[in-house]
Image (cartoon, rainbow, N blue to C red; front, side, top):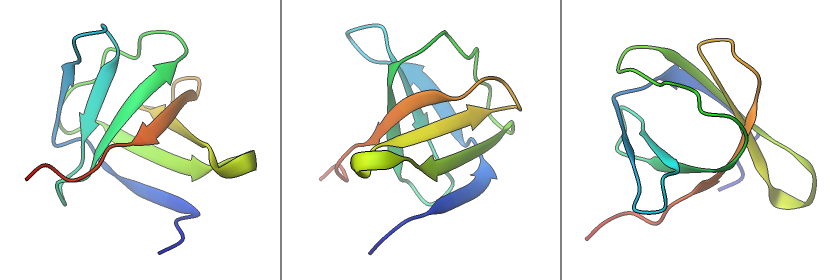
Length: 76
């Protein structure tokens, strides 16, 4: 399924072992920040994820500058 844009809120967020943030959306989808400045995410804040060139994605958390993200596989 092709995703062009997702507008929702953050259900939760936590730091991965490498220090990058993982955003969890209400539907359980997990998106990991791969570069950019720290966004200080909190549950309930708005997040907009948009498709960029070459299959990459950018996320804007709480109207801050966009950061590059990748979708993580569903956990078993």
